[in-house]
Picture 1 (cartoon, one colour):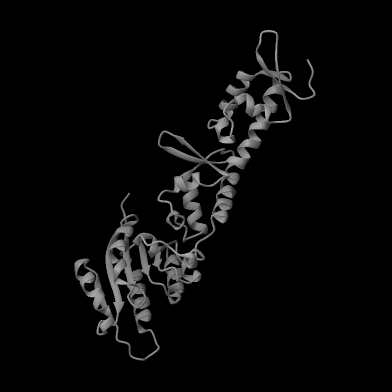
Picture 2 (picture 1 turned 30 degrees about the vertical axis):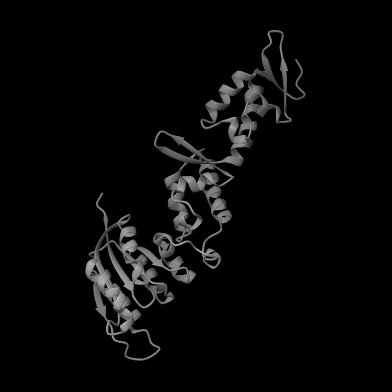
Length: 307
């Protein structure tokens, strides 16, 4: 599958030149940048910091004079140019680098035309523009700058992310999928939270981010990584053990019960529940009674079920 072609459009009025290298590096994760343009009034003295960056990175400066004080002609020029690029149909996606809410409708219009829209901006970017993009990336994350308390207000709380992941896992489990591929979870999260980025929370990988969530269990099988609702898995373990014991007449050898549980829950491990032995794990449930027979075998019996 060929890489998507992107048009990179930068609003120089509210984006610092220090980000340009990281912006270009980040975009290589999504496709090839075939159009690189930046918009501003290059006759102004405050645009001098951009000039060296434009030359070394082959970014085309688009000149727009400020005809009237207090009116942002640059925004209008960038919007018109974006629509011209859209109608040329030479790209599959756009990257709009701005912290200005004036581009909210533009992002929505580009998406309506089937284009993938990535937004990049500082943490002051209004939520309206963030939500209008397929993906939004905060520049402080890709520049390596640590966020402050004020910046964290723009990031979706981890509890909300955890809740959204559990909803995805429960939905798939109800459909007969006990485990969900981590890639599917990540894709669906971005559709709900365009600004979701594990770097917002101090992580570099989505899998390690998930390992930090108490209610999520990460399952690895060779190169396949899946997620499980850990709290629901514990409930399932008890129900499965009850069913297995009933099918065996109300009593079963401890070792056989362990094997059957692992067969039905491939990722099962008592360590996931804070126990070092399967025997101690079984004893933690009030529904079961452990005893030893005349052959000194450990048995598990349903409470209330005599011999």
